[in-house]
Length: 217
Length: 57
Image (cartoon, rainbow over all chains, first blue to last red; front, top):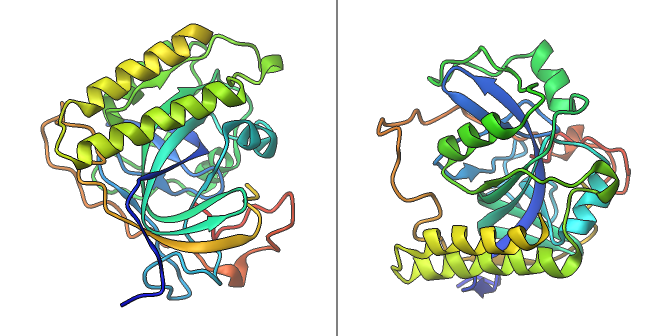
C-alpha cells in the first residue's frame, strides 16, 4: 500500500532539448547537461543522492517538463533547438507549473532554426558524449541553416512527428494557449488509446498533430 | 526551467507502448549510458531564474 495516488491517465508536458549530430543520427540532448535522450527507448531518471526511484518529492532530480507551452517559451528564453511535448510516467512529482518524472519519451517535436548554441552544445564541445554504440563520440552541433533535412532525420531516428515551424522568432514560434493545449490533449489521447491496445493510435495522433499545427503553420 | 513548488506525487501507470511502433532501423539498440543525474548537492536554489541545475535533465 502506498500513499502516492495512482493516476490512470497519461501525463504530458513540454520541454526543450538541444540537438547533437552523430553518425547514427541526431540525438536530443538536455540543454543543461551533456545527457542524451535515447531514441526509441524511454528516458529514465536517476539520482546521485540515491532517490530510488527518482524523482522523490524532497529532491530535485528527475526528468523535467512544464505544464504549458507558452510558459515554457517564457521560461526557456531561447534555450534549446528543439521544443516538444513528452509523455511522462512512472513516479511523477507534480509541481505548480510542471512535472518531474521517472520515465519520459517525446511525443511531438518542433525543430527550430539553428541559433546560438545552447548550454549543452557548449558542454559537448568540452566533454563529448560517451561512445555507447551510436557511432559516438562524434557528436557535434546540428548547424544546418535549413531544418528540413535534420527534421526528417530526427523524425526517422525517434519515430515521432517533427514539425518545422514557419513562424518568426518574434512570434515565438509557438501556437497560442488554446492550440498548444489541444496538441497536448491529442498526445494524451493517443497514449490512452495505445494503452488499450489500439495500435493505430500513434498514426492517428500524428494525423491529429498535423491537422492541428497545419491550421497555424 | 522553473516549475515552481512541488504539489503532490503521482504514480502514473506505465504506458503500454510509449515508443513508436516498429523500428525502421531494425537493429537492436545499445542499452545506453548509465545516465546519472546529480542531486541537489550540486544544484542551485530552485527559485534562481538562471539556475542550470545539473539535477534537472
